[in-house]
Length: 85
Image 1 (cartoon, rainbow, N blue to C red):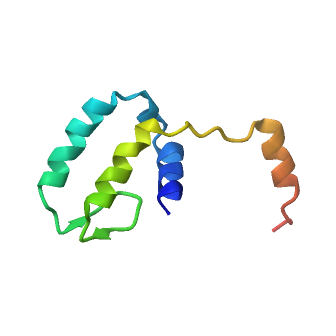
Image 2 (image 1 turned 90 degrees about the vertical axis):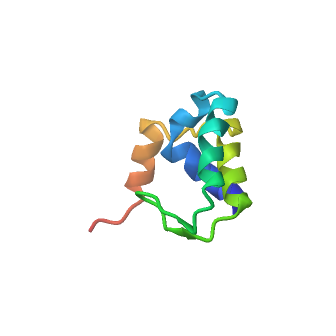
């Protein structure tokens, strides 16, 4: 599950690979220290009762490999396999 969460972070937030991990941690640690009963996102499901696993996973994001999507030819080949609507 954690690997899929990190893949999504790489796809959705490609900037995360350009941040200084220590500075990134300095922005995450205060959120962790708040002890929130839930974490809400603009485009992900809520996380009720977040624990250290959530924050530790987020902190791994800058260390993952950047996502590289298909090029135009591969995308067109994929779309050609779809059935017409």
